[in-house]
Image 1 (tube, rainbow, N blue to C red):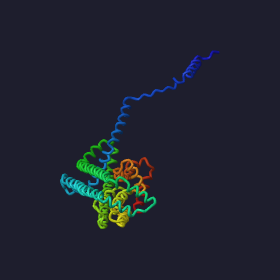
Image 2: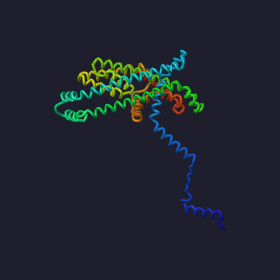
Image 3: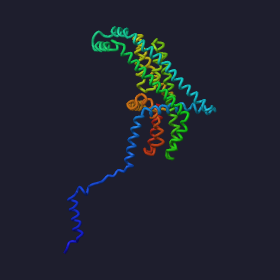
Image 4: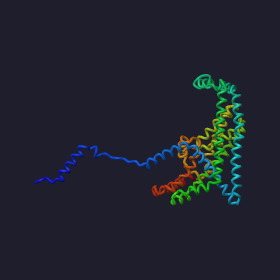
Length: 375
């Protein structure tokens, strides 16, 4: 009985496959030009975004400032002021604050630099007088006094001039941010509606509901920060003036600005104030350090909870971690920007993330926030 031919054909086919296994396992990958163009566009967009990251940070800060000042525009509209009058008042306030800062800082820094250069010989004598006669501190003091700063004042003057140039550049950048925030106040509503039209209909409704809440959080943070900075600067000015520390106004302004930086701002502000107070006497330096520390504790445990309330319900650990990450990525500006953004997370969670979380996650977070606020 003959074997059917189909079986013999199948056997030959299997022999052919075993003879050429590579041919049977070969796969072809086809990438269309459309996909390649999309990849190249994504790479180009990422490159442009990286190059313009400082511009985006400045625009975000200008947006935060404009959101903070937006209640003033609402108030002027409520009282039927002309639009140009409300914007003019805000412009005068902002530009006046910048001009006041420039007029206060530039002469004070110049005077402080000249005084420091003149008093370097006396400072060296005082260090030698109070330093130990031997030991590790004595060796460190000798190395410090042998530095070029004490041998020749020209490098120190150059460093001071460089610092002044950096400070002036920062003030000019802040002036540009202030002007940009005025444009946001003038034309922000129209641009917001124009951009909102690009979103799908389901997201427009969510953003329309979440935007006022986020704006309230940002405005509450910035207005509260302005109050605490003014209080910190006024306190520093009173303390330094009573203790007859030179250039009390300069160090008061530094304290007010540094108060914006959580956790690290206190140390940045207290070091130059104590160093300047050391020229008066060691007791004055200790008094400045103690009084600054007392205010730091009062601000953290008494002033801030009453000014912010629940508008920034962030734990100390959250603040620390966020500031560390923002400082690494964006420096001082990143630290300033991160807190109002992070504080808006509960609104984002309720609006967009609720469907993707466990059913009781939002309720548990709200309950924990209430406990923290009253605890």
